[in-house]
Amino acid sequence: MTTGRGVATAGRLPVRLGSIRTRLTLLYSILLFGLAAAMVGGLYLSLSRALSDEPMSRDARYGVLAGQEAMPSSGSPPPHALASFEGEVNRRALDQLRTYSFFALAALLVGSLGVGWYVAGLVLRPIGRISSVAREISATDLSQRIDLGGPSDELRDLADTFDDMLARLDGAFENQRRFVQEASHELRNPLAVIRTNLEVVMADPDANPGDFRAAGEVAGRATARMSALVDDLLLYAHHQRSDVRREKVDVAGIVGETVDEFGAAAAAVNVSLESEAAPSLAVLGDAAALRRALANLLSNAVRVSNPGGSVRVSAGHDAEMVWVSVVDDGPGLGVEDQARVFDRFWRGDRASAREAGRSGLGLAIVRRIAEGHGGRATVRSTVGVGSTFTIWLPRLVAV
Amino acid sequence: MRILVVDDEPDLVEALARGLRREGYAVDTALDGDEALAKASWTPYDLVCLDITMPGVDGLEVCRALRTNPAEGVVPRVLMLTARDTLEDRVQGLDVGADDYLVKPFAFDELAARVRSLLRRDGGRSGSVLVVGSLVLDTARHEARRGDRLVDLTAKEFALLRYFMSRPGEVISQEELLDHVWDEHADPFTNTVRVTVGTLRRKLSTDDEPGLVETVVGRGYRLLEEVPGL
Image (cartoon, rainbow over all chains, first blue to last red; front, top):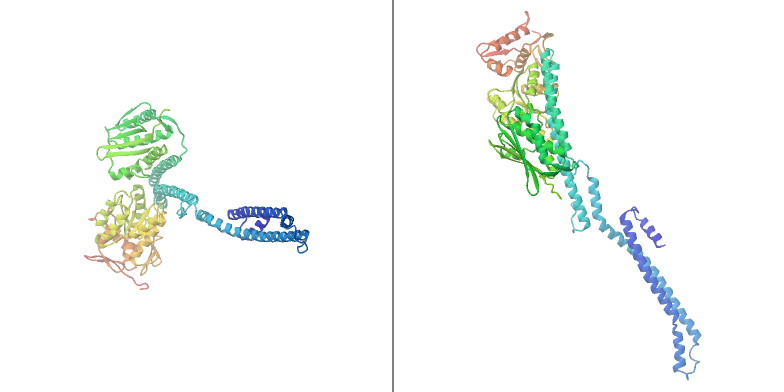
């Protein structure tokens, strides 16, 4: 019956019954009302029992028998009348107590519903703030933050965690947006070459077969450039994933294979290729990705080396990391370039990069693979002496 | 009208130059910012088509330098050609003084239309059709008419007539014609200007029509404003 009344009271309020606020309010009221009702009921029962067990009229009769034997009994009422009078008084008192108790309990119920509603609202207010911010956030605009002030309690902790997650998402989305933008810029240049060449030669009524052939050759070159770029874009995007295969990989083996693979290419441009690797360089990772990273470094080194120069690959480890270094004796990089050499679409020499069909993603892929393995890629360079590119990977220590 | 095309893609520069020459412009090319500034320092270009992302001196710097230090006091119109199309990129390009902005890859016809529009602003004339007396030149359709008669002109003659028609009645020197109608490949000691003016003059006037291009001895040439009906 109590529950029925509680629901009825809450149901009149313009709030959904399913909300936590309503449920907290009801729970609070029911518990408080139940406790109060039990207490009042207990008091009432024990009082009514005490009153009916020892009526005072009996004491009065004992007193007459014990102390006032000689007294004439004509003045005092008869004992049975006294007892019924006393019973009537007790009954009325109990009636009154019951009435007051009912009123008090009803007032308590109404009061507890109000207080419960208010307190629940106070406690839950930050949650409303969190959900309203979450509602306003769309995938394109992650700049909103909850920024919940106040004491550092559980809800503040929740809001701060939420804000941290938003900041990370915002950063990731921003990075992704910039990448797509840069990639489309890079694709637009060869597209412009193709489109302009075709349109100009098609619109020329005097164009001879030689002109068409020339335009076709230009379009072919630009298309090859775009294919190389798209391949590298896919590779770059692929290594963005963190779910790369993890297996025990011997870095010394990868160094040997990759150096063998580049032997012919290096010999063709008269660059000598040397390698030395310490034994048992185990890391946990994706062998294909690591081979790709080292191949990118090697092709870079062979390209920048002067004819007659040399490229040295070495691998070793310290206490925690395994490292692979590629040393060239090319022109080297200035300090400013060293900071940007691993950036996407950075090219030391745009014109020659274009001719060679290089995308400007090679070293960015290297960095991404190294970081995907929990390591990093670094460069040390002196202008006029050469550069040293190094991949650092966490060492797998035998258990 | 003389145009400088600047981009670090040789294949693009060559195609643009070829297309714009067919439109009747004198076109020079440059493959980087330094070359562009050098050429612009000795030739008063009417328009520069400028790529923004170039190694070394980039398009924005070139544009700024063209504004502050123009050859012979003539600031060329600047049409930015670029792969970057964000709002900031556009604002930045227009802020350094570009007159227009075209995002790659563009349709060549659009480029040609914008070039026409930018060069028209110089002459203070609106529309792609120039009219002087009975002469009508449709720069978009590449047609020249005298009265009802269609005049068949080569690209160079067309360009020469357009330059005359942009400044009717003024005496224009041979050097100025060489600067604005011929490109960097023209030999300054050649008589090509005299020869082309001669053929243009012959094509514009049949036997019974009065001549329109007058030679001012020692100073240059002048396009006469013929009153229709006389």
